[in-house]
Length: 248
Ligand code: NAP
Image (cartoon, rainbow, N blue to C red; front, side, top):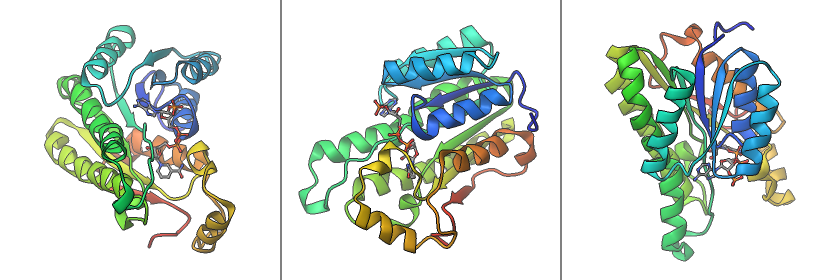
């Protein structure tokens, strides 16, 4: 335990699997008590039981991040059960790829609702507690696609560019209350989200990565630990790109 996070309370969205699960496990290893939020009850309960074995508290909270009523409920529940909310990681996200001319309304709306509005919903609900506490760390998981765009991902790139802008606005709005808000922009990380990409496209992506490997969920969790700790207390409103050098 190197980050001074023992007994802090962290809420992580999309924590059932992938990057969110690894972030939750890494924060638990540092002694944080964890509130896990996900739509999938099975993966949620599995992650919660893995965390409980680390001798910290874990709350499994089923909620859809795009539903503001559900979000307020799980945030209030976290505060009631764990007594504080020191760290928020807005990680839940989806893709619904299609070319613009073929993109259906639902594909656009769902991605914006979960990736962007979901991040807003949790930022708003948690800010009530963090502003009162006069401390907090908010970490938003964006994407390099939100910086550079991508063919077939107009909805996803717009949602992640929105997350980056939201990060900067909330960093400015909350700065006087000692709340740091930063974003991480992962590149190509090995999870279920990227498993569906075909081998040919994966090979091409690899050619564009100077460090010559795909990212791991741990690569992202390690940066979350830094941003959640006071080792990053003079950093706010920034986007940390974690992509093996793909975007420079
Ligand atoms: P993942 O493996 O698909 O995990 C995402 C988790 O979020 C899943 O457990 C999912 O539940 C949950 N989720 C989906 N919609 C939700 C909702 N409405 N409310 C609550 N939870 C919801 O994805 P990942 O690769 O770990 O990605 C995590 C984040 O990193 C996302 O924001 C993604 O955009 C970002 N990112 C990933 C990569 C990458 O290469 N993997 C690159 C850049 C950015 P289900 O299991 O039910 O789907």
